[in-house]
Length: 576
Image: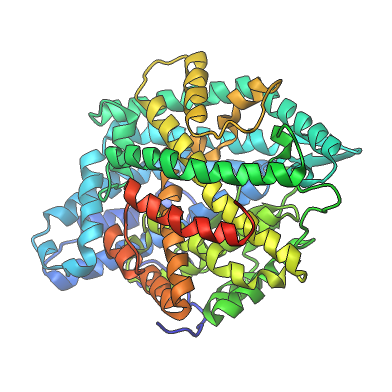
């Protein structure tokens, strides 16, 4: 792989005018009409047609992404919300019937069989799947669903608590839970809990509306439940529902015991007889929480240095994003929760959004989203936008692997050896502890969408049953049962991107395998990493993982193999 960085160039337009901007459907419609009605007389005209579709998709996609970026950066700005709403309700529904016609035209074209299957196979498979799923009656329902899902960000973005006379977002307040003063931790935890519970009914109502919409969409498409519909819509061609259940079982058997070891280690370090929910991120008295940076600018500057020590190509990506003002890192009032890397299809340089508050978890998020950004840069050369719409199982492999690769150079954030050791342990704790949570959320979604007409209470009972299945039982939640019963409401994915969560678990296993490879041969592992990400979605998931030098595998045996790799590393770090 080429290890040097070359600035990306905005994709030149050959179909649309350079000054064309997305304003309304009337401005877009003629371009779709052109594509739908254009004769395809040979392979060359077919390939030109596909490039023109790609160009149109890139322009529209980038416009839509900026509407979402603007709205999430400032949820109080009504103009941003209106622009996003206008796209969802007035433009996107109009495009979908044309997209369906274009897909049918491609599949019916006699020259489609002449396209290079070494590159086009995943794309054509996805097109065939989209045609099978398309229902005109779902277009408006999907628009309503997209719009309604964004209300989760609006509700969450308005959640604030007061500590010592100052307002904090939920993300900012979380840093107090690392404070060595237990009374401060408990006080802030109680305030966070009360604030979240104040929105319990509102979030339940929103979720019920979303579940109903999703169920109707699945029914219209001929599916018994939304779970089965969503598996097809997500293009899960390389694994099944049964594979997900195998993953759940494997995590319960091989990962939960590792997590219990980690929780007990923290309990001993804290010198506590009983571990409460506000203790799970804490350090012993006299040990200050890790403070790796103070401002968003400092976070990005240090991240650039870390990436540069891995490979100059990686730092070139972040530096370009800095120069183009495509980083919004600090948490603030009115900003939507969470973090994301948003690929921008035409210019190629993505946007990173997060809610940094100066904590260690923010460093991990920056490394994670930075891995996504590198993926965007590496795949930008692919000739069609569709080739860059890679599945989340490979997207999250890019981000989670970067977290583990970058650990070696976190001395850029931590000058003291003891702090660096703590930071690395926190990352490895997270890499393991996230797996039971992923299994919990994924299994919960299977329950939700295969139990039609369930009540709020039935859903809560199911949540607690599943949560208990993947819990160590070490943390004492006495007195906070209501909070624990509603923990699922803080999970953005349940509201905004249903069933997009097990991808993190699959990718986390892959990232552990990548890190094992990295510890054996750093340069080869990074070469494999860049080679896989450069392919975009021109290969199947199993082929992409193979290019990365690892196996696409959810079996209990494989999970045990990775758990056995990690356990001695924890022992070396004093966790036994």
